[in-house]
Image (cartoon, rainbow, N blue to C red; front, side, top):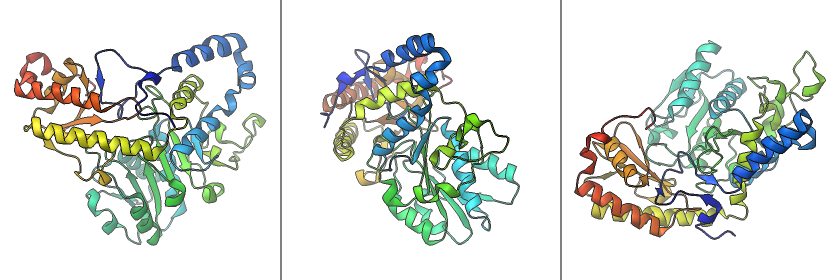
Length: 396
């Protein structure tokens, strides 16, 4: 097993404490060289022949199988490519088709906005009278009923890090005859997952956070193996065809999760992601989780002792929390800019949440201690009041 932390596997800038890997992972060593090889040697020299000579065509499946190990899924059950929003759309459309007599899509009030936006668009396009219900996260199970077609939840809340009980929610959904969809954007690569044991029908996720695949890295979708051949793809792209180069007029879906591929795979980005996943070879997710909890507990205790202005917004019980810690502060945006100005990078989410992600692959106890030193000074001296930290950037 790789020793944690493993900073030598990443290109981290000197003088920076990076607690934002839950939003965008750092550059893995080897990714630059891999991208250069794909561009210069494979594309540059092989041209279109590289689809065969460099085996580009099977890259989405090979990368999907590497992700599968880290989310508790069997080989062949994870397809990669496109974006998370597209994968949400595909999963939800398939789920609604599986439950034609039901009208309710159940999510929660803490779900990531794009998931709900995609659901809104699908409902309007379908025009079949579906409705979207978003109770408080703790009330989800109580709101599952016989009219629920699909339960669509983000496993770890992007603002607070609150984590749903995957097994309990999925069991409740199935007891009511609903289809279960999990968004793993903030949990894949952060917490141990066992999708197969959960029996959830679908899961989706992105790879630019904890998997460190780079900005715009391709998304993934999981479909439970026993239902794959019954899924009618809502987006019947040619890469999901059983024989794409037969160029047949009629669409015939692949007899595997590959039917959930849509367009031409982004080979350069997939290659970077493939290189990034090298850092996960031999990593035990349970060991990673234990290290994450230790770091988060150290951070919470130190911040609460030394920065009384901040209020914990994440669950105090680590079993109910992902690999991030959030604190609420009225001037959270300005305070986060002040921290970034001193070399501590986290991020801000409206209206008042300061988020800090803990990624044991490259964050250790010394980093946490140094981060809290910066935070204490920032709040004690109210450095965030400096006018230069008041200007809002396009990305927060």
